[in-house]
Image 1 (spheres, rainbow over the protein chains, first blue to last red):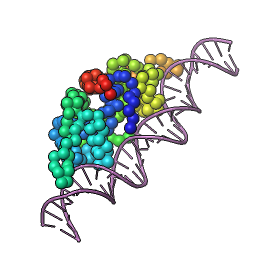
Image 2: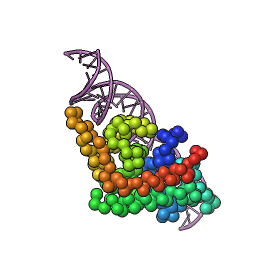
Image 3: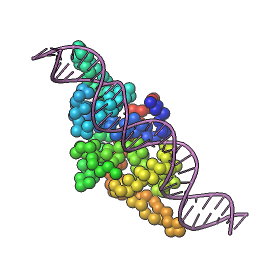
Image 4: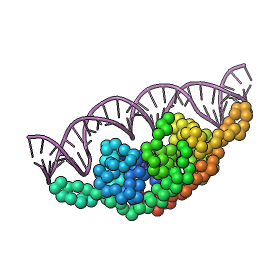
Length: 107
Length: 107
DNA sequence: CTTTGTTACTTTGATTATGAAAGTTATAAC
DNA sequence: GTTATAACTTTCATAATCAAAGTAACAAAG
């Protein structure tokens, strides 16, 4: 795992954590579509490979964006619930959405 | 070049174009720090490999975020200037900056 | 007129990440 | 004992990344 950040720029440091192909979409699913279980995240329309979904959920938990809470025993199963830190990402997601709606209609 | 987008979600479609490790930082450099030439982009504190910088600049031109305009003859040299489409990304960059400043102080 | 310098890349080859598919574990229901 | 569900893990081929060196087009210096 790479812990060092590329620079002191807050934009760069945010992208060090969130700036890959899947992480922000998982946060979108959690924050906007209220998905909670592994299976729910898996069903999203972008078809993330399960290996990457497992990895990204783990990272999001490690970084404090999601908390893994058991919702059932025998067998133990988990929900991923959003933290305040995750909620602070909502403006980013809204800005991405607004950009997409305004600028990516034809293409 | 991969043209198909992962889904119809505007967040996903925006990330299909901007959602990699370097593209948004190049747009930050262009929009916020007013960098123009290849050498200026290269000097940014994140040390992007020149091969990737060349590739990302090409993609940003292809997608209409930057225009490559000659600023000198013999030898011909170019500046990359931001388009309106690029300027529409500013709210995303501002949101990333704000998140980083608010949430990534210790780590 | 050969060497050094500048800008803007391109090429190469090793390392790392991604992705599709299949496999695993735990348990309940039939 | 077979099928089903949830939540992953493993495997391995393919693709992306990265550091370093190389190339091209010219200007200026010696």
